[in-house]
View: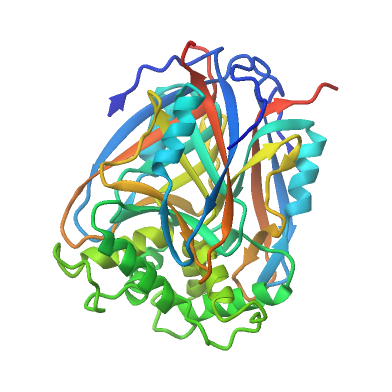
Length: 154
Length: 154
Length: 154
């Protein structure tokens, strides 16, 4: 097991919080990995925990492969099959894409927590963090980003 | 990007933990948002991270729309379609609703982490936090609630 | 509501991070609960929050029943039905099991956060933490484990 040399008791713990807004282009994936890394860099975050929280119920967050875009296309297809339009949903006043969007959001989730080491999200080589828009039309989506940990000296 | 004026290094960080019990009425959604807000108020929590953890494997937690109850009814229908009863499950000694309940719990999850700002869960306008009972009969369900952050002066 | 006697403001907060590697035997569940408990014991972690983060996109983490192994077998069957092979996936160069693995990972997630009380994961009686291998062949999978909280005196 790899052991990282964080001090066990650290009087320099603190937190930083921000809110990010993204304009989506309708159904699809928005890679927000760089925005999260920039947030960490701007706050001089060093080691700790980053929580990303999406304040909506018809969009969601997921961590998926950032190499072959076909993975994201197939994932969208898979979600369409799991929550198809015109499946007799009661909640339909906002259009046929609305209730499937809620189901997809419930299945993939709106909260992600990722360790931060030396100022960077500790993602695997092929992992990206995505905001997933499940509605057909473009929307503005707000995220809260919360870091708890240590900070680099200024 | 919105920047919140949390001190980067805060010697007043601490934690508070509680356990909440809910009696469910069988399959359905229990809105626990107010219970979580009350926990935060009771402990004088100010800014930080709230983690809600459900200590069961046939119920789960989800954040979904709190406006139109049809959304929750449709979400229950969607989960029933994804994990139907009488689908040839091996694990059936506790009744036909048991294994579908485990599948639904695995798909929606038992752990949620939400930022807290100024003593309140930083949810979007239409978001509520729900304990989802997947078993047909009423159950008693235990949640652990953990806050890590700053506290208001007494 | 149960109230735990953690000090609200605790100058002894700190963090500990490690990385664990697991060799999977191909598709199936690896119970990592004891490995996580050992990490907590080795670091003398007392009360806080444990985050487990899997650095891959075709395997995932889940908390499920540790009593009847049929539950895990049925859960694997359920995931196979939700993301079948040979369903016309575009992303197929790595084999027919690859894209279903990504879908299953997106549905079950790669990040888990669990409260820690008195040095132990605060799991329910029947809960175990599982690394789920979704690829057909064995893989080496890396996890980052992050604890934030208090530590026992040495």
